Amino acid sequence: MFRGIYEGASAMLVQEKMLDVVGNNLANVDTAGFRSRVAVNKSFPEVLMDRIERYTIVDEALNEELGERKFFPYIRGRVTIGDMSLANVLTEDVMSTQGAPVQITDNPLDVAIQGEGFFVVQDGNGNEFYTRSGHFQRGVNGELMTHEGEFVMGDGGRVDLGEARNIFISETGQIYGDNELLGQLQVVSFASPTYLRQAGRSLLSQTPNSGAPEPVANLGITGVQIVGGALERSNVQVVNEMVRMIEANRIYEGAGRAVSIQDELTSRMFSTLGRTSG
Image (cartoon, rainbow, N blue to C red; front, side):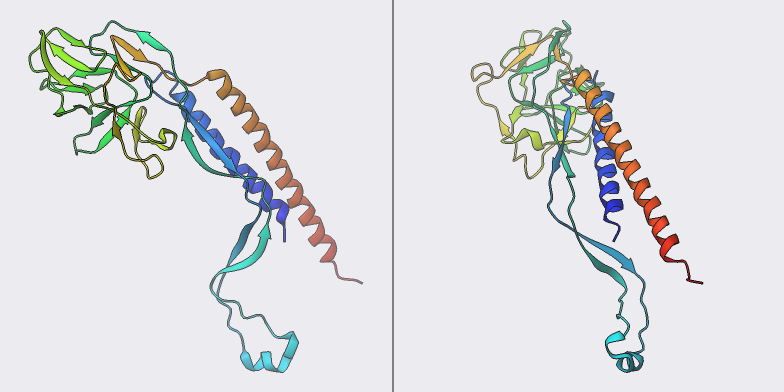
């Protein structure tokens, strides 16, 4: 079997997915609250290979006549080839929990979370998502919304600003409008936030590995607090991402050359062994 081709192609696929992750990070370098993704490679000592075969009709009477030289009865579908050792396989990408700088905007509807936690937002169909981006605005009906159109959730449901003009959000997440308490921002945490799945530019959704969201109690006291008039920027490190991109490109090119060499050697082998003796 041409294991070199399989190994080279596998390495190319890993680096192709790595470039997708890096490209997505760089595309969101200016997205408020964006947490970069990190590709995870895991080593697999053996991967079982197979190939697709079409059904071959076998003459059983002829097989009996040929004895040990009988035809192998192929079947339709996958036929096992054998084991192959691979260097690694890209299994998933996880979210980086590294902190990001906070930018003061003086916009009363901008808020940032200091510490680990996520705002809860809801789309028009009632699906809940989680985000570090506190770049909020007033909707046409007075609801507090994200700039992408999701509703910001409070402890009692969607936050309604009504007709209030002077908005203030305290470090404990309480929302005041014209000196009246309008609601309490809902902030949650996860047991394993790295496993949250990206559902949009700054939106995240829970997974079985991330665990269920747990409300953060005693905001402003337990080490997690809200900063009003500020936004958390993206935690993407451009220099690091460019280094990863260069590395992935070089490995991809090397694997591609390995596949070309294996293909050339295979062609020479068939040319040499396929000659008929005169």
